[in-house]
Length: 529
Image (cartoon, rainbow, N blue to C red; front, top):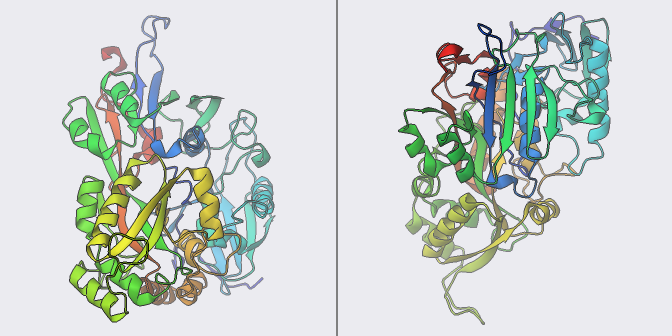
């Protein structure tokens, strides 16, 4: 090991950020409720209970997956977290340093960390968790993320100190470990027998819900909320109604069409933030026309992103230009953005010899046609698909829609058996996901498009050793995505959480309030409830 080390507090060079795609099962949650327990003795402070309503049409194929994700967010903690600017921030790891060659990283845990069962979190336990995760990940359908694949070995060197050795210098591995929960027995998943280190500990995980309680030995102090009850609703409308009736204290993901109504209610407060997920119409390079750069450029010019955002998402989001998280510290805001010019799109297609004509067996004249896959039962994609279909039809391109349940959609995308697909792709706050989606050499993978133009820029991002190297590589990637687009990147989505005004939620800008849940307070004394 080289004796020269760098600290993130001296030279902050590496960026990072965050899954999927396929399971766009969103980050989430918030809220708390105070009510008086009739059995409590006179003068005693009743426990503060929080009821969260969870409903999401995207989870119809996996009805309990969203609950499990939310439980993990509350009960588990990671070594590091990724800030919205793509920089790694301390969590269970208090600090870290790295060798000058970027291959050896030394981490130092916070003191006195405990699992929910009271056992200590030591460097040897953390090393075992990480090594087991790496071993298990090699057998998953999509394999390990690019950053995780860069990890060669994890070893403890003292009670609070461990070393991660890399196969190659990597800006992606911090982002990868930001997704690995540190639990007492990772082989058990998140259940009553596997203990996490988060602010809340799981008491019961049942069909249609879960109950958690405050962890008194949480390293940032015991949460104000005593109990969290998560309730699953069959759809967003039912969950919204439960919030209005006071049956729950918080609603996870307010539907865009309901947000204006809830905002005008004196009983609720809305907290919104932009998520690192981009709605994308991605293309397969196997299609004889879509494989052409000029054709894909023309299709980008034919789409009015502003109208799409206004109509399909009720204005809740931001237009997208590429798959790079726009709040990342290395993002090049000076890069030209895609324009809306259907006339220019038609001229490009004419120059490519794709003139409007009637093919045998067709009744409507077209330049060419392709089929777009989308997730069945999700009205967002249905609305977007119909709008895109109409706009492409205006320039003579016929896009047919085929809706599939997730169990059928996933293998189609992984095997490359599609012309195009419409989905919400995660970017995370860094580049681990972006690399996973668009680098052509990774196997297994989330999707197979045959796109190779971004491989070089993605490799330079992965191996960047300085901030300057990273900025240049990110600039190049953005330019490639715009000049040789693998997809039409439509818009970044916005999510809203609703919370009863009976509770004070810490003020945060463009962040998910679930991260502040341990610090929520009752807005008035419990005796007044």
